Amino acid sequence: MANPSLSEYVAQSQRGLYNSVFGPDFMSKAGALPGTNYTVDTANSSGIFNTTYGRKVWQALNNQTRFFNAIPRTVWGNTAGWRVRSARATATGASRSGAITETGELPSIDISDVQTISSLPRIIGTTFGASVKSVFTAQLEGGVGDVLALENENAQLDHIKEINEQLLAMAAVSPTSGTTTTFTSPGGKYFKAGDTLRMWDANLNAWDTTDRVIDSVNRSTGVVTFTAADGSIAAADGDVFAVKSRAGVTSIDDIVWTDGTLVGGVTTHTNYTDDSGVGVYDITLGSRVAGGWNAAAHIDSANGAGRALDLAYIDNCIQKIRENGGEPKLILMGHDQYFAMERILHDKQRYMGQEEYQVGVGSERTFPGTKTGMVLATYMGIPILPDADVSRSVGSDNALDGSQIYVLDTDYIEMAVAQPTQYVENRDYFAANSLVVRGLLYTMGEMRCRNLWVQGKIMDLAPTT
Image (cartoon, rainbow, N blue to C red; front, side, top):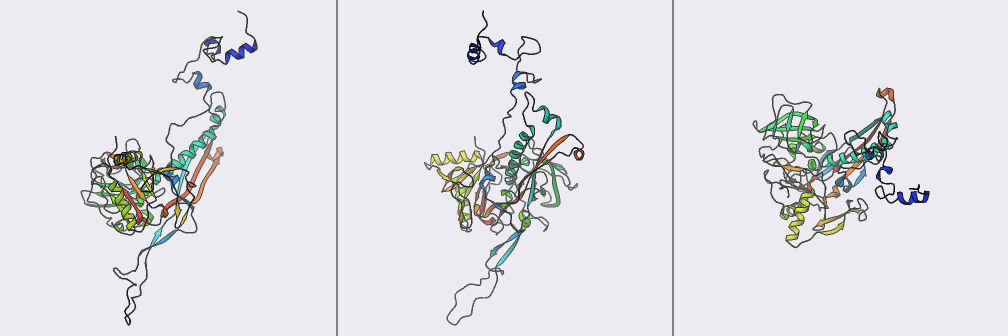
């Protein structure tokens, strides 16, 4: 057979590897011996696809950060806190307003009851690095290309994901078992290293006043390990761990909290026994009683028993928020409750509407979609936002129930940024004592809620099937 011309070569080769006139062996990349074809060998990565087509690295991770994207972001400003007017007068039951008869006395003079709120920025960091050798070899055939640019891109995704997870971390959980330095709970994976916890001891029927700082969290097993603990009191089933302070940003679960909230069916815990037990914004946890200015508008629980979602639970949250002077702007839930709610509305022939999400502070509003660009389902005109990172309740059977639902007035919620995300790169080999290039992303800020009394929560919901 005569050799094909150049034009025939090009035309035939474009038909594909196995349709070529040359046959599959001619177009395959040779192996160690002439005529030997490469195979996809994942064990030693010597296959043609592993060695030749390795530039692009695809993500197999959920990098969505919907709640972080939904809340407005503001400049921190020249402040370390703010004031909240919690009563019309300082004296209990007093009033400086009233009817005046023709010759009657004026109402008693009094001043507003104003509370001090402390809020300081928190720092969240993400690191990455690459050896000098890997930077070079990644540019060769089969490499990923610019390995630093690749890891920088991935670190950016991980950085925002970490902030989103911190914003949705749990405020309290009941363990299944534990020791003086650890506890295990399926809800343990929702805590973060550096968080400081206090433990309600069911046997003593009181709060253990020893701070327990989380050293590490095993997100697969739910095991939480402490750097310091009270060696005389071991965690056990029936106890409760509640967040005293965060290493990272304050979570929405910290904000929507009331003392005495039932956690995993445990009903004995009420308040801390000393004033050192402070929580969100340095507010003493023992003062966050139901109906108080510094507690949630409404928390709907079922004593640790998972129950099916009912629209009445959401309606009650909306009602309580409105009674406290707020107006719900966002319903936040996991995907499981989103589909449960959709089935409820379908059975009742009431359908979700479509509405672009708007955020605002006070009387100011953004144009529709300018903050997030997302189109969301609505209930009673309130946008519904499903987020995969929303924490799930832990039931009295020590199993994970369905995701929690938050009904929020976002007029009073904001992500205050003290320093926007910064990128720092270091190539000082002597300082590292190694031939590596290191990178750091860090953000300084905190989630603020200037009115805790207009936020609500629904927990102890059964997982959907």
